[in-house]
Picture 1 (tube, rainbow, N blue to C red):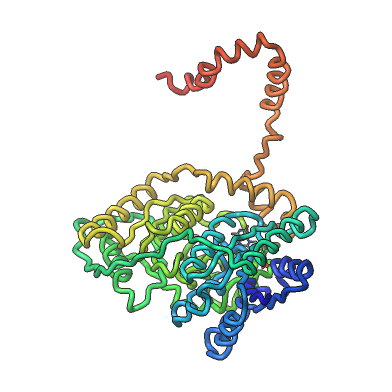
Picture 2: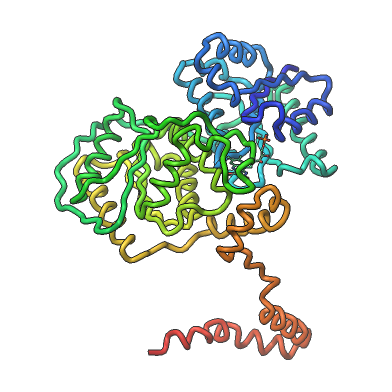
Length: 458
Ligand SMILES: Cc1cc2nc3c(=O)[nH]c(=O)nc-3n(C[C@H](O)[C@H](O)[C@H](O)COP(=O)(O)O)c2cc1C
């Protein structure tokens, strides 16, 4: 059997993920796994029709396709996403159609599920025969039990191909909507006061709805709001995955392009940030993805703490809950406040106008009051994951994160809560007594709310 492995790691063959692919190859020498590096070669693949065609020829001649990549910022690396965009832009979907396919990622399990959901949906959009996905922790390959798990996964993939196993789709195709948004006049003007608001977009001239929404949003303010187009910035390339920023947040691109200055001087100094873009496949554009990937120079520490965040999006966001979750999680991970998301997918012009006006008003009001809504599981769960990773195995090479986390008081391990530990020890001992347990059961509900009384008394 011949399998094409589409390698999404910017590190090419020096990728952690590719070691997992090598292991599959070792376990199944009867099959041929041909690895094609996508991410480090994306400029060539995009600019040289022959290079792109060679990949298509490989896919066409193979029995199955393995999408193999690291998880980058809730998704796949931006260059890998660009490749996915090229497949649809160039109308070569039929090459992938009906191919058996599977997904393999490595990560530290931070939002690996959204990356998997994305790739699964892409496979469904390409009418591929999706067999399954495997999310390995970066170091799982060192464990015999995990190697066995990987072997079983790969074996199942090969068997599905060999048996022409039936596969089903999990994601319905996205349905677009023909709608020309013509912005109306602003009903009133919001004064940002001493606050600084910045709009970041990747809008292109033909994206009339997006440009119209940005203009209408800007018209809600009494003053001028700065707009920065990611396409006007000189960004030399995407994150290389080299981790050299881990020590002191110094990126290898420092001084070589606009990105770091832009992030530090425009975004970190703003109080209100609006990100505006158009949905491309099941995410924003790969340019937007590059923006997020390059922000990795900040490490795992939040770099937009306390900011008000808004999204203006054109495209069917309500059909992609995975993307909404990513946007919400991004805000929570940054300790910023997601004030709202406005899309052009429902409603008429008047409704969009009033939603944009309302977003502007909310952003300013929240910025004035300092409101940050509480984190949900997205932020709380992920925060604990990073806390443990940065304190533990990732302390090296992420020294800058370790220092930032110490400063922010992130290392709030429950082991340090001595009063609680003593209480737990005493109560565990006492609860061995049936009489004590009976009393506890009787008083449980009252005791749970007792401590709130001191807050509630007038
Ligand atoms: C820019 C960047 C973003 C990352 N984002 C995530 C992430 O969202 N979730 C996660 O669990 N790991 C994340 N990682 C860690 C990588 O997924 C992990 O190190 C992976 O094993 C690298 O695989 P590779 O060597 O094949 O590129 C990120 C790493 C980098 C450099």
